[in-house]
View 1 (cartoon, one colour):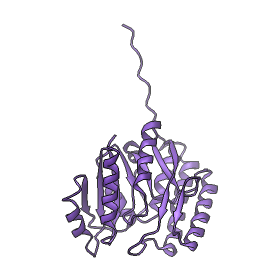
View 2 (spheres, rainbow, N blue to C red):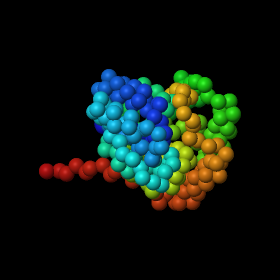
View 3 (tube, rainbow, N blue to C red):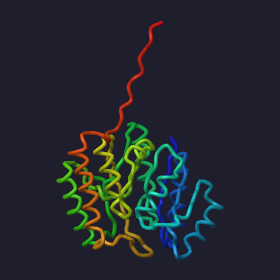
Length: 254
């Protein structure tokens, strides 16, 4: 199963090299067939120049510039419309996600034939390093609200680092969220539409360079909009968008 890794990158000149080298070396070590698809989200720094240089040493690197509209959600969606693999992970460019965790996701999906594999930083085995205190409080409150409203047990919906089969991505289209609220749209739609999933503990490390692109004050209403959309679909769509089960082939007597 070929793995695609979609990485949105906006002004990640200082982080992108370490991220891509570590990711490539890890996937190569485990002999995982893959492509690394970077969406350069119209960066204003030297991100594109760095990608040009890295393409000479990382044979599986593919990158394109998203001409616009721009923003985290748009950048991820740009990659989700263009990846070539049988499954696709959303991975951060700032070294916050661990490539070893991605290998665990991939193996879990292959072994259990899951439609999705979600990470959790808050389950046993998960961890966060240098997580800002205020951001942690907001994260836990937001995830609690999502769990109560949607009636789910999964406790890290806002975690962007997840893995989906191609069929799952096709089944949860069209995408609505243009910003970081895409991080909850993808998993919630997958759950609501009947795609199965496994949860794997993962780690998260705060960025060393640059600034976080997530502006908490701007995102509250946008997260709430997507949450309400998924709530309405779950309880009022009458299953119109559910995953289509494949009927078993009938044996023919000869």
